[in-house]
Image 1 (tube, helix red, strand yellow):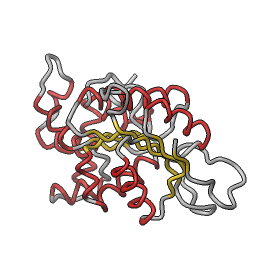
Image 2 (image 1 turned 135 degrees about the vertical axis):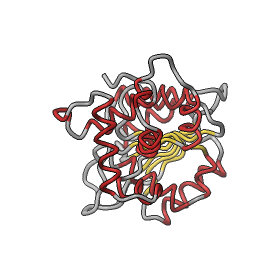
Image 3 (image 1 turned 180 degrees about the vertical axis):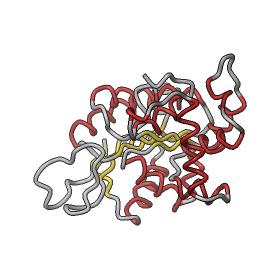
Image 4 (image 1 turned 120 degrees about the vertical axis):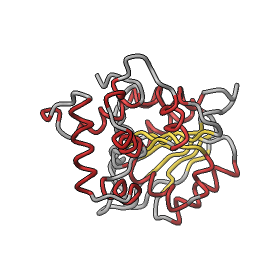
Length: 242
């Protein structure tokens, strides 16, 4: 197991999902068996002012470093030793079960919508699922890291494309207009209202109206507050939001 040294001047471990604007940089752990990619991620994060406090090359090791360091975010490869199937995903789900609310970003070589739905099954807040190729767009990748650590949801556009193409009988999304589905797809990518407006070349007011219609058609009541956005994403991914 590779471990980075403790952050200087930190008297206690950080709480999951919390950045440290006053006391230091965001703190992450990485579980990735490829040394080249692992070190590349460390460098990219460091250049962005994000500290990697520990790295491991297997799924079981992830649980240990999360327990020890209580990071703001864990970045996890789906396929790791010994079988190179879904060890990383299972470890990520175990982390969320043991330490609810710990932000997780899962990286995958291929699109597997099951991975996204399995990961998000325990709640969509602070969850990300991206293809590894997205790392090449450094600015977009770092933005996703920060959004997930802050409690946002970021799902890879290719996964969303597959979900859009898979229609279900009695799908609650059938009530949505094509534009509303576009807005919901961008919400699932973790986009803000302003970013959605820019992507669709409409006003923020128009986006807000579409989102209001989405909430109404998915029967997400105002009393559910800020969680309505998360619950809409859960509905989009085929979950009931409960």
